Length: 438
Image 1 (cartoon, rainbow, N blue to C red):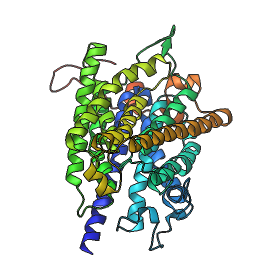
Image 2: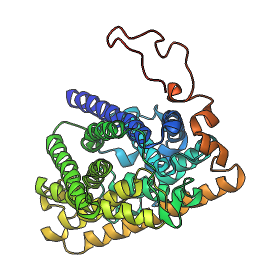
Image 3: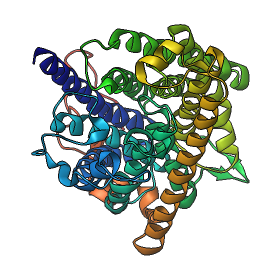
Image 4: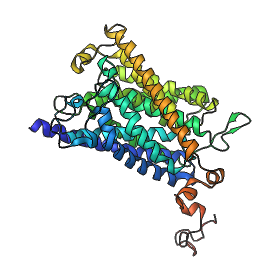
């Protein structure tokens, strides 16, 4: 009984850390958006988080983890908290069904948050509801079922401990589809060349990255769905090493390719490293975690440049950070899974630990299936939204900013309108002069 209580407390705490990642996404995206859209980003984050909870409660959890077939689950609708036996796919954990739902719902919300980062500064608010319902209710749960709910990938030994593929590849490829369907921001490309559209606050963006980093402790170490007898400390060390080496790899590559120590690349390097280690964090040694983070951080930088040159407007580098990080993480399991970890977690060792090509082969198959399904299904949904209710804000609304055109207020009102009492009319007592006019 004491062990179950400790496990439950840890999973709830870990779930709260994953929930905190929503604050990280908010700060990151607000910082990298233009000032006229910062309030709209805040609205998007809180509404999409709420939509994710509702959709996952109603049908997503059942499809992801319910009993069914190799493609999807079909029990535990509205999570059926009163069902003492719970879903079979999560039966390895002794915590109650409600706690399992809470933790997994936070993952679904993160996957949805990843998607919308590619469509910053130009997506209409009303599009969030239909896409969230389909993505969190159907698309993400089907992929989660394949890998975590006893589906066909799990049956063939595919490994993804905390979601390099299930969460990060899924979110990134769905976001890539959205970026293609919605098109680039006004002014992003001139004469065929990409133009920089800087965000309004890099300090806020890096604060967001650091909040995400903290949340990743729950994201990875909480995926045991327990604490007693679990190597939580080892997973946290591996996770932090990967994040740190992701930053350093991005710093080096940015200096090499851009000639500068780009701040945005540093933040995306952390995200790439942390996304890469999500899947292998419980399967690899610390040195391997460092290597995985370094590879992901280095690979992220040229991919940002390639996506830009392909005329795909991804304002915060979602595909390069989450997508490339997720790809590196999924594939690394085929090479670096240790024999001890494979035995402990019921998997197969990687190629470098005598596992042969079987595990690597299924990691490649799983990666391809997840990427193709996420991209294809999201593309269809975004295309239908575009043709029916409209996906993108009108040109005049985009130019004015989504804060005022979509929400009727500014995130930073003093920047755009006169606010009575916002500035002192009398000389400052400290400086002896007046504040400069705007």
